[in-house]
Length: 257
Image 1: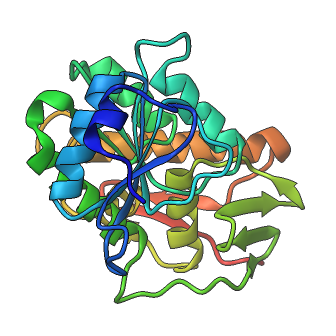
Image 2: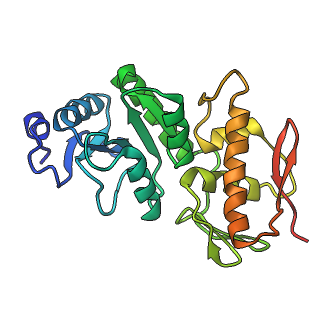
């Protein structure tokens, strides 16, 4: 049975997951809320459940998250949200993570996106905006028009495991974030064809997501993501040169020799 709002707000049994919302609705989006403030955790869980989400709340990092999207805000405890992002990635969690922040500082936002968050939202925007963004994130991670097979994909020395969202080069795990993996999967699915900056950016976050400075600020974010991906390849293989750039247009994965 779902816990009452008072139980959540008071932080009772904060170590165990608490469920709120449309848990019996098969189409309800399952949101895992990791929030270290008991009152904020209860309020936000109630607001999201009223928006139709099936909300699971915890005060700290769970062992094996089971959700469609993770909402993360842990800035009061000894560990920060950024550190938890890193821990989630190291645990192999391939669920999209949205970071809540008290202040939308550009440096903090860029760091969160670099560490694997698919979106960063200031809490002052309110639960309605958050709900809309979460729905966009989940829709982007489960595209209905282009269903992704769970079968492994081999492209030369590259092995992609869609079932795990993991990528391997010469049998070595590249340790990509979920966003970086999604970019690589997009490029490898279009071998020899250039993919636009906008298409790559939409795959990194979700369609219509806006960040960066100016109308074309997303291009800098894509270039930064590609640099990180290349760096991870070259840490395994210094001669790696499979990702080509068409200046002003986009990137492609070269056809294997």
